[in-house]
Image (cartoon, rainbow, N blue to C red; front, side, top):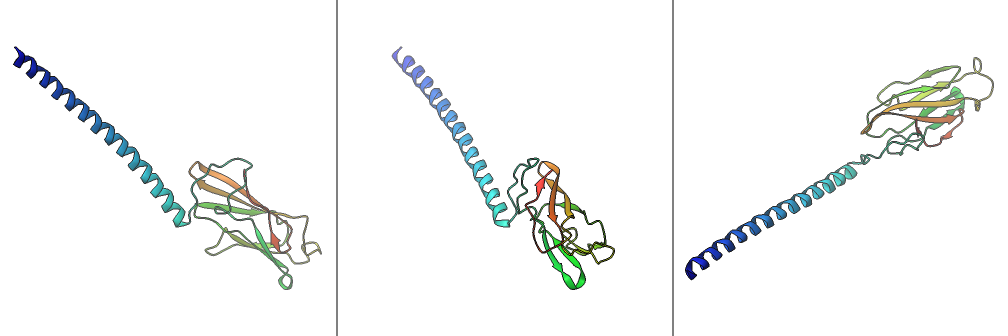
Length: 171
């Protein structure tokens, strides 16, 4: 009887050992999978950062647009031409833009940098006699494709003299 009891006990112990080993293997697999997933996320973040592309951040209405997405408007006035060149630096996100606020004269935006730049020719007449045109608010409205969908960013610049505008904001 003792042999049967010992055999039974051994069988139970072997079954328990197998279950414990299987449970430990599952726990190890899950742990390894979690570590592997965390490593993959870190690798993607590193790759995105090293590529120069911004890590996506939430878009908040009224919030400032990160300059890696679009820079503030830069203006360069050319007295001899009575013209001002306006430009922004666009980041890697897809975007489409519309300039506005000129009110007189003519504008030209072409080439591979459009809509990132535009030239406003404001001769006198038809424009008023000032060269600074401080009453004109030049705007660039961009539709930007973000991970949250298409969002609108607005950049503004006051007047026609050389300088740099305020940071763009999300609308």
